[in-house]
Length: 350
View 1 (tube, rainbow, N blue to C red):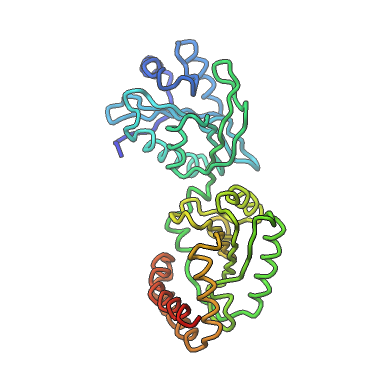
View 2 (tube, rainbow, N blue to C red; view 1 turned 90 degrees about the horizontal axis):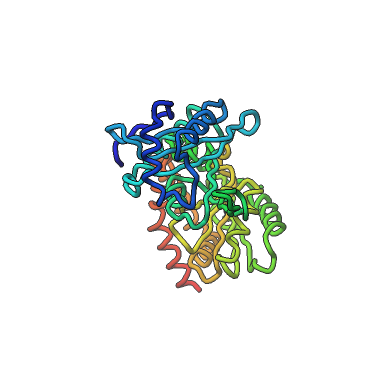
């Protein structure tokens, strides 16, 4: 990342600001309309002196303007949100200045201004801007045709947003709160799973669902487990279901793992900090030919019918939970060898 500073726009920035914008018209057209004349700058500057508007300059180590971030229409009260606009200066394009500046801006927006939500509306053809916000943690929320008039023309925009929860989800305090906790088996787990399955069936298109099953340790009678109900859904097409599932499960307070590197599974968590106090449910959406569908069911069924092996797995989980209480990834990785062995036995016992 280049060395930069982020500071508020000042009146005396006008000459350097206008020179930078005038040199960058080939980049800005047709995406944004930035001030080009002293009169336009004055109007722009006065607008961003209002308490609900903020304009910040990204400057290099020598003070040259590398880019601009505008935080506009700040709404307090129950909303605590704002809109984000931005543009890079020609000499600094695609050199990391805007990404470094956006990181500083997000810290200012969420920790200093104490906003809860920031939304960027971007024309879908503006791939560089979309990649910038996507790379820095914004979520895609949809598309609106004829959303904003730019240079006299109404243009459709994609909506990309970030909330405070999105911003802090990887910080140390949040990760510590989302720790591994193995508890004794609870008789209500199957009932809770059945209730959640019925709820999921009511919101997802029935024609797309092939099967839904309760999997994981809470589906094995007598097995101590993390108190999280795992539900696996087989669908006819992951691609067809994705947009529907994300929208509908969010209504049930599930959070979609948009950074999942495994393209054969959609994963959702309910209650995961900082979006909640503790995880209560996981939903895995897969296609029936995937190894996820086969392996989770085979592993569950084998342990249900082999109590000695189930006890061995129980002891392993308790040991690993102590060793990796605050690192879910290491806890999961440490179980892989045992799980692979059980899956091999399951195949041999068919």
